[in-house]
Length: 159
Image (cartoon, rainbow, N blue to C red; front, side, top):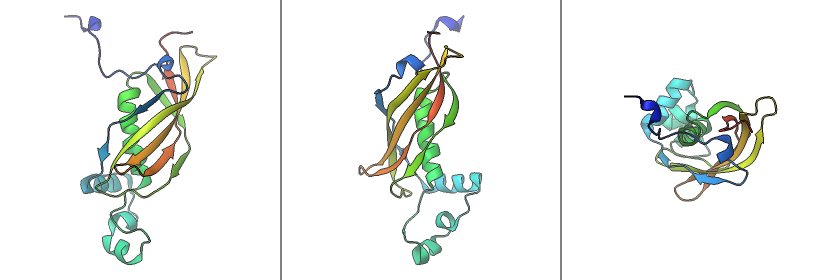
C-alpha cells in the first residue's frame, strides 16, 4: 500500500495560513511536581527557589512551589509547535520574553497566539518568517508570560 496518497493529520500551518492578525489558542498544560523535578535535573536549574522548600518558606518573597520561567516557555512553546509547526516550522530565529506573574506547581497554563508579522523570504520564496505574540495565561486568567518568537516557515507555494 502506498501511504503517500493518504491524508496526514497533525501537519503544521504553512506560511500562507499565518497572515497577520490570525489568532489561536493552545491546549492547557498543568505543571506537576514531577515535571518541575525532571526539568530542574535535566537542565541544571538547581536554584534553591526550585529545589529547597525550606529556603522558600523562610527567605523567598514568593511562597510556594515556583515553576521556572524557562520551563513555562519550554512547555508552552512545545504546545504551540506540536500543532502549528510539524513539517512546516524549520527554525526558531529569536524572541523577546517577559514574565508578568509567578506560576506554581498545580497551575494550568495555555497560550493565546496572534500573528504580528509575516514576511515572505526574497532569497527563498518557498519560505517566510512568521512572528507571533504568545500570551500565556493561568487557569484563573492571570497573564504570566508574553513572548514573541520569530520562526522560519515553509510556504505551500513559491509565490
